[in-house]
Length: 372
Image (cartoon, rainbow, N blue to C red; front, side, top):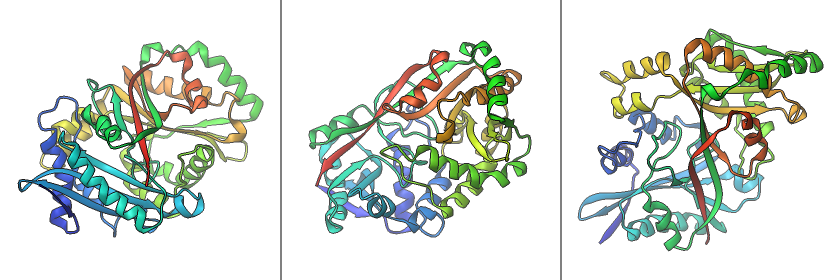
């Protein structure tokens, strides 16, 4: 018999967070999150996502043992402002028992029907900066801190329960040696002169902070046309600024400014923390923090986390300026591999940016949808 319990106490939430550590114990490609970071994500007093969303967390038990978990989420900005009658599910993990998945999803349906919503989609988090999608290909590739890893049976569970694929995301990678400066060196000089643009690089985090709000505004503007996009609120901007910007190498954040010092393009790259997080195994102390600092300083793999271009400057080659700045930084640091985080398969504009680097699709993931 399967029993579903709401994780509505600190201890149950900790059980919710720690369940994947048991499910993927000794798995060679799963990358564990930081337990404290996950606990903060689910804390209604700390995560500003709860200002515009509501979420409930559930654990599945079988024979007095935890065998699954799920979060049921409504993003009210999405429902009210975008008129998308959707309940989300996320942070879904389960043993290979479709009845466990079915029992967990029933709690998501309850929330959706209670609020007269029309369909369910997932897995996805509160916003576009959260993890997204069930992996459908690439199970023998190392995960990352900004994606969910899962077993191959996850997609089949959803399909057996009547779900269909809604959105597909691609993850690409290419060796840095594929980057040939002749593709952008001359072009970026011409583009800078033609549009009166200049790159802005950083060596100190404190120098980035005055630009961060403007960067998030541009993020909202540049991705607004995508069907899955929900804008980041002002409160969320402050939260992400404090939580993430100080952790990213300042030299890996690049801006392009116009003659009035307004940001027209930006990119954020992160060192790969995958191996460091595996060593930390969810804990910053006593040694986890050391492993993360070492990765921040020495990792030869980098992840392109975000890239955005003002719609007015899209298709004008502005990314050539960004690539030239990264080429100089990566050459200096001896970077070996470049990895792109999940991008919508139908976002052809973003895929065209990378075409000269001969990227390889190494993983696919999807969200799944079902009518209520």
